[in-house]
Image (cartoon, rainbow, N blue to C red; front, side, top):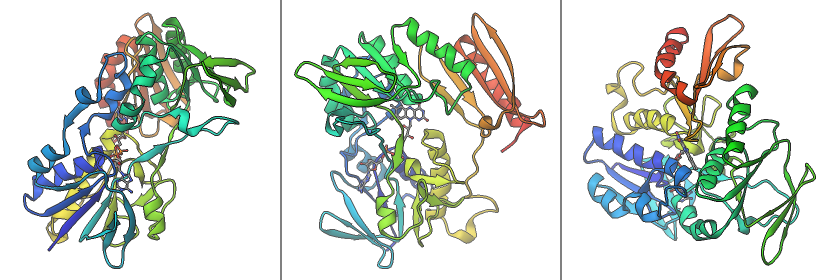
Length: 389
Ligand SMILES: Cc1cc2nc3c(=O)[nH]c(=O)nc-3n(C[C@H](O)[C@H](O)[C@H](O)COP(=O)(O)OP(=O)(O)OC[C@H]3O[C@@H](n4cnc5c(N)ncnc54)[C@H](O)[C@@H]3O)c2cc1C
């Protein structure tokens, strides 16, 4: 009997289940997850401290509710340790479960940059509801917080924690915050805003040594500063969880390599979400996971010969990325925004409108900040017209 097995219980896994159920009410689905299987919105972790959220208020549905609602078998606190692609089965806590289609939705693990003396076990990461639950009291009790990493998540967490009344320092090795997303003229405005609310921003700097004392942690930085802090949070990027795939001989590059139908190099094995690499990119955002789940559901629950031409193939439109820093919001879009050769920018007291162009003067992306974020949708339409997916 056909049985879809999904490894993982995060957004990508649940989105896959929801999409499959739209197409097929009956096909057997088993979801195996190492965590509690609680549905929650991970982006809400970015403002959980200032809004005094708890694991209970963040939870949307329990695993039991999901199992009933979607007619799925859900195994929680169950770690898949091995995939056998020849026998088409997975090993989980001494049990073997066979699949006709296997979906890897194993997410990613936060990277903790190495530094002399820095204890991984004492460094907080906030990439799941469980991590939030585990560290909430410690962060609530802390006054001084150091965030390692000035990318999207680091900036959002720093803003949130400062709003929650803490003294926050961000340490970023690059010269600018959000350096992989926006050009320096936007970063500098954001940095100014963060400083205005009280965040200490240290760019061109990294932690090189950590010393743990009874009443604080001392961080020595490469910029020769000594930071005294109560807690250290790492927001320095994610590494896709590819170990299961590697062990099974499935192609892995930065993530588990999939084609435009979400198929891996192994027959009947698919990957989705933060663990997957599509068109050479790992896209650790919700929108690509929604689009991928749409494609994947068709692939695994509709007969191939019933698919229309082009249906069931992934193509990434321009999507808007939002930086959730409430007093200085930023929105940007453009698949190829990093290739912008020139910028047409307008700075005014309301914020920035910046349009990026390639060498052929074609619009390839835009960034809007502050009150100008209202202009994001009209600009998205302009971008879609100029450079369609
Ligand atoms: C603070 C924060 C804010 C964010 N804000 C935004 C935002 O505003 N917009 C946006 O688009 N994106 C945002 N993101 C990113 C987005 O939330 C993620 O891309 C998305 O949630 C990833 O979902 P996933 O299912 O791929 O991975 P995960 O949620 O990491 O789920 C992975 C699952 O796999 C399970 N698992 C792993 N290995 C095994 C195994 N061997 N056996 C069994 N189970 C296993 C885990 O237990 C987990 O259930 C944010 C992320 C963070 C951390």
